[in-house]
Each structure stands twice: as structure tokens, then as C-alpha cells.
Length: 76
Image (cartoon, rainbow, N blue to C red; front, side, top):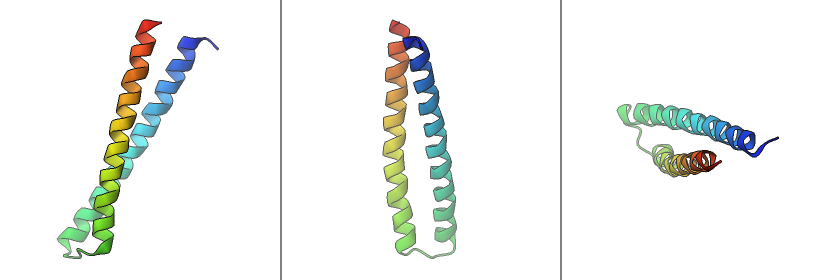
């Protein structure tokens, strides 16, 4: 497989991972908002907040990796 095709496949895989992370963030966000509206702010609420922050950092890392690979693709 050519180098350009490998980079395209890698970018596609990273985009899929990014979509999964976004879906998880939205799902957890909906659950957290439901807990907040029901006035059930306990350990599960705070664990959800921490998990969203961790997933947001992962989102940033994946986005940077995608942009770095796109720049490599432009150089080829």
C-alpha cells in the first residue's frame, strides 16, 4: 500500500474515533443534565463531569492528530 493510502486510512480511523468520543460526550452530558434537573447531585454526577473532562482532552488530542496527518498528506 502506498504511503498516501496509509495516511488516508489513518485519518479515516481517527475520524471514526473522534465520532465515537463525541457521541459518548453527548450521551454522558444528557445523563448529567438529567441528574442535575432531578436534583440528584451525588457521586455519579461528579464522576460524569470528570469523565466528560477526560473525554474532552481526548477529543483535543485526536483533533490534533488528524490535523498533523493532514499536513503530512499535503507534503506527499
